[in-house]
Image (cartoon, rainbow, N blue to C red; front, side, top):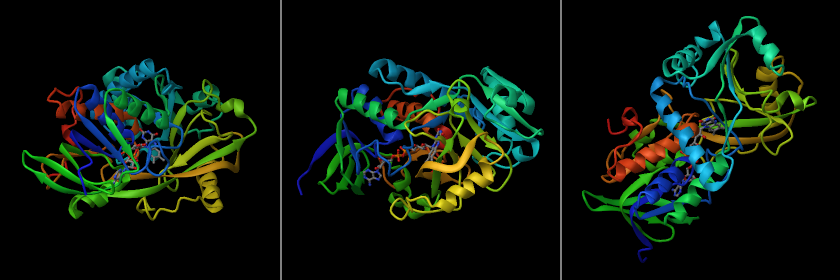
Length: 392
Ligand SMILES: Cc1cc2nc3c(=O)[nH]c(=O)nc-3n(C[C@H](O)[C@H](O)[C@H](O)COP(=O)(O)OP(=O)(O)OC[C@H]3O[C@@H](n4cnc5c(N)ncnc54)[C@H](O)[C@@H]3O)c2cc1C
């Protein structure tokens, strides 16, 4: 087979992370080939479903705060450049009781209190609300008396499909060669100082450096011990019907995370912000470990009923148990909820980037910029060194 391309950097996987890396590499003057087995944005991986929560005080750990702050600046800059709306500020509410906050959320016990402390440390505009104040300010929510809220003014919604599409558009504008429908099956050779050869179904691609950003497909592309750091988990999203849509309009309803301590511990949701008639609500499930090939994409009526009964009933006013739309999506999770951004454990010139564990989208713009800057020989604006945990 003849060589189909050569570049300074080949970016494999052009979802949230890969599109950001490709954009910033191309803008920095690198010769970039971007490869994806599908045509992002698509609904086979982790970056679909119309909405993602973004919040600034990060309960997963203070180290994430500068990353999301830089990402917000990048999303706004991308909006100004493209004329697209990518991020809408709706405010954000985290609800928990003292007991439910003792259980881990995204790998962190005390997520609520850590969120409050991060807001205080970083000067992020916020308020603490009692259950009574939550009910008064946001009539969609019906918290119990022992629950309380963390309210963040500048939290909101990202539109993942549009973010990915606009990053790819900018990458292409700056000269990136983006190829869709190309499946990378192997990194055949990676020579010290001599680049790497990718085996694809369209022929080999040679690059001085490779960035592997293949999301839920990443674990199977790594040596077994490294791949075992990740679990791919099926997640289910529901859009429930309401007869009081006004309660869920942006402006009256923020994005929210609700840790109520019951089965599955928590759920989250959004004001009405997409084309579907219902209100989007989702849970996080660790038990459905799967692969992108084997995952059951259809959502059963029993699953919808279980989500409604376990989480929604008695908490969100006026939602009916009838979903108008359901979808599945894939988490690629690590045991501690951290990202993995490191050199490949055995191949020189290959960087692995996974902004994963169910909270990576909001950070992905700055992660992509920092990875690109590192490869371009510039000082990255945010510190990703704590995620270099793969090589051991
Ligand atoms: C249901 C759900 C809700 C979430 N909610 C939030 C949230 O509210 N806030 C937040 O910040 N984060 C959230 N996340 C997490 C966030 O969306 C993900 O961490 C992020 O989208 C992952 O991006 P990625 O680039 O790693 O993967 P993807 O966007 O899936 O991209 C991987 C790409 O690699 C390509 N690929 C794979 N294998 C190959 C191959 N061999 N050859 C070529 N191409 C290949 C795929 O086609 C795909 O396009 C959520 C995730 C899910 C699933």
